[in-house]
Length: 319
Image (cartoon, rainbow, N blue to C red; front, top):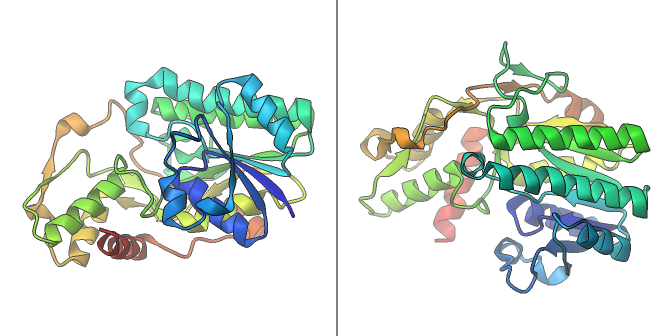
């Protein structure tokens, strides 16, 4: 039985990854800064909470990280922790950088000292690329992030790369584009849109307040993306991968499609607030996830229209 340590187990990706690994016969140990006060709501929603064990671990405290990794001695470590909101990173850039960069570094250093055979997955982000010149994004594109979150993710990517090359660790980064599910926190715009549209469909007279609708994103289905994470750690040679659907849509198109699924006209219910525009933002980018398909055998099946249908169905069923 393989043993996996999942940092950030209480989040969307942590919950779905846990479900996947349990189905594959893994023993799962999750971490949290305080296991007594964390609700682990997402794990409970998908009925996996009672199938794991938990350890208190602060990613910003090297002694804590080293202690847990030495104690558990896992086969694989998945780092899905750290501040996850691009918008919030403009308000708290220091917290964002420390939680992402320093947390990743502490895990890498603990692996180097404790057991350099442990395989390590790091959660990267498409935000690291920023705005590319031709709009086409592959693993060879340079990073030019336009948010504190993107800067932090880019820094952690290079730290993983450095430990892989300097110390021969099996350390990889999955450069994931946007991926959604019903477990998304309400601070994420997709959750905000789906939730408001469903409430309006059920009779609410509320307005959905949004920022810049012209931005483009590549939205996928989260349960598919965690499978790519696992596949990356099953390779013989560690490599980084873009994980995306390969199709981008404007936020306006996401909103329109959501309301159309509910037989509503989005223009009757949406208000634009320029206070919600970010100081700088990733405008557009089309991912080319061919490497993942060729080397991992992974390809996104759920595209935006089907994703929205799934999200609406689950929102209506669970509220």
